[in-house]
Length: 558
Length: 75
Ligand SMILES: Cc1cc2nc3c(=O)[nH]c(=O)nc-3n(C[C@H](O)[C@H](O)[C@H](O)COP(=O)(O)OP(=O)(O)OC[C@H]3O[C@@H](n4cnc5c(N)ncnc54)[C@H](O)[C@@H]3O)c2cc1C
Ligand code: SF4
Ligand code: SF4
Image 1 (cartoon, each protein chain N blue to C red):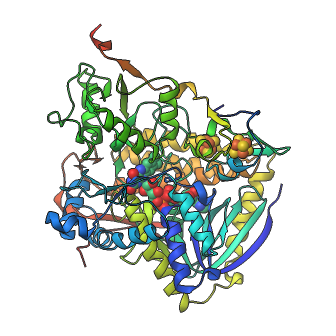
Image 2: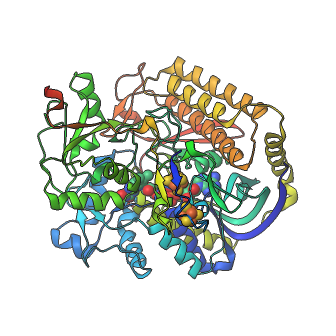
Image 3: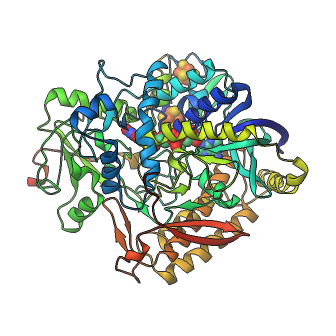
């Protein structure tokens, strides 16, 4: 099989149709007309990305709810820094906090059920007052797809973007391949918005069942890897984030469980028993450190006990899980008559994740002219999640449209060689008689991360890991074989994860200290103390193919 | 075989194949076939969107959820 060639020219290209990409495409189409926008999605926008079957908590500032509580936007920014660590750009948190109400209002006019029974249903999680808007978000991707169709925004589903086109010092579009049609796409664009979501599957999962992941397994850090290769600034790559949730049946949504997390002998985990309350999350369920400690102290397994949860709250919990991508888990519990009120459900700590990526300004612009980014693919803040995707997606779409007004298209002749090389590489993967499968490449990448770039890190180990990752990547490029287009998509993901892993180990080597936040640890065995001078964000970019580091203070609220 | 399709109920409308984020299904002779069962991540989209309620799941063995009755650890 060889790939047919298709060339597209469009003012604004949006890569990835998750929450941020849909918002970006909608806003860009408002500014410069839907005919000038193209959204390209690996799957189908209707049910793609981490919000495929729902996201139901959106942290936000709603003046009519929060002002009477005496709670200000400034306090929300402060609380977010307090909860998620110092190394975040306050100006981005502030931008989300001040604009998210408008996005929620827009979504309400598009038919999204952001209010529950006419009320702003806020619950308390990581900020001092209730700030997480809890709503029936199960079908928001379907509603986004409908909204885009209504506005005639062109969408190219089942096409995976493989690389950015770099022309001189700017980004001039991207190349991709069909997942169901044998086509190689060259897309020239004046502005490109990167919204490919987060980074899953960099490490082996806690079970050996590869796709059993709490985060969407198709979001493989493609955007971060593409931006890194193109020379954009990325940050936060050295930090490993840990999530917790039901053991073996890995799903995000732990904050929807209403119960007490306890050890095998019924002793609650955390400071004291926080009680059971649907209006606030149990802190212990958020704390991987506490869960690990329970195992290490010989008190495991860790259990979720809902036996004291009132029936009304059990119904609320099921409603919440149903709206947060846990439909299959609920069905499983129901079919096996495993009522969580009667049975304690085992919880565990999941594999490390990176919540890091492209650096943007408050308008969504990256360090490379012509490239914008939003959502889980950015590295400026932690736990931007859905509000970050809605708010920054909108702004990135707007800035991309504004930028396109004064920009010209790239010249194909300037970039033909780089594009040709990429196409030839994919043709080779598809036509090789024998070779390595994507699974082999992925396992080699994940094992390298586990062995050299995981929880135990120090200089010699990281250097060895970098050499091994480069070896793995070189050999993969020379030997990968894809039986079909579906496998080619996985080959692209595996190669991207290798670049993500490489950048993570490079940054870990550069940060010569150890530091702990509630949810992310950075441990260097050879530098066990926190170094106050490194209380800065570490920014990596490739210049002429060589890593270049910058340390800078987190930006204040502008 | 994570998603299992009930042949009696399925009308071959193609919705599951169209929306699956993992590209798990292929239409073979107009019938949805589960082509990449091991890649299903149980997002639930096919379960929710199938208009005929023809989809169910067989959860893979490594995903069995450990649950415990009251008093289990006191025995
Ligand atoms: C089960 C679960 C529950 C969650 N609950 C909550 C919650 O309650 N509240 C909350 O705020 N957040 C929640 N989150 C997180 C939230 O879903 C994400 O933060 C949010 O979806 C991020 O939006 P995004 O647009 O950046 O990425 P995504 O929504 O993940 O979208 C990225 C898109 O890019 C596409 N893509 C990736 N690579 C490529 C490529 N190379 N080419 C083309 N397309 C590509 C993907 O297919 C996907 O559609 C939850 C996540 C999960 C998994
Ligand atoms: S969505 Fe349901 S009815 Fe339609 S093809 Fe799939 S299984 Fe059959
Ligand atoms: S549960 Fe999700 S990933 Fe699995 S087959 Fe259905 S739609 Fe695809």
